[in-house]
Image 1 (cartoon, rainbow, N blue to C red):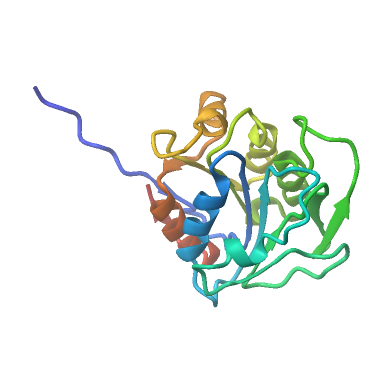
Image 2: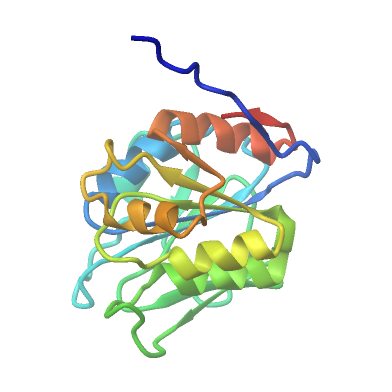
Length: 207
């Protein structure tokens, strides 16, 4: 039996520097984010926001654990912190994290998708503030948080990448994004990491 050859397509043919990276995950997200950040160099010309669903009662600072395999600086920010290239910002417990005017806002507004932090507020805020500079990434997780955020990112001219469901610990979030045509490319973790480096530099990427 013959199988059709995989057709490679290029994204970012406009050579836009996609230097605002936002990442969302839930179940299995800690492991996935650790692996993804490990693929990114310390001199990455982009800043990164990460939301992983977590218990509102959590008092742990996740920055050390999530940064254990990366040369990037990884922090849990304070409200009003300035966004800096080469830094990954991890949403603290019980706060939505959003980006605006090169600063971080943390707030305790109503839960979305029954959780705070949620992925959609970060994605939507980045789309509004930075438009085509944004790359949004949905990783493993239950439910459909991030789906509306991906739509806003793509509508604003940004790019949306989704973890391959077969690789995800919980495939629901990636599958929702794919089913609603909000994914520009579906890749494994290593491929996403490599793509983010090239996109931040304004290069086209074959997927």
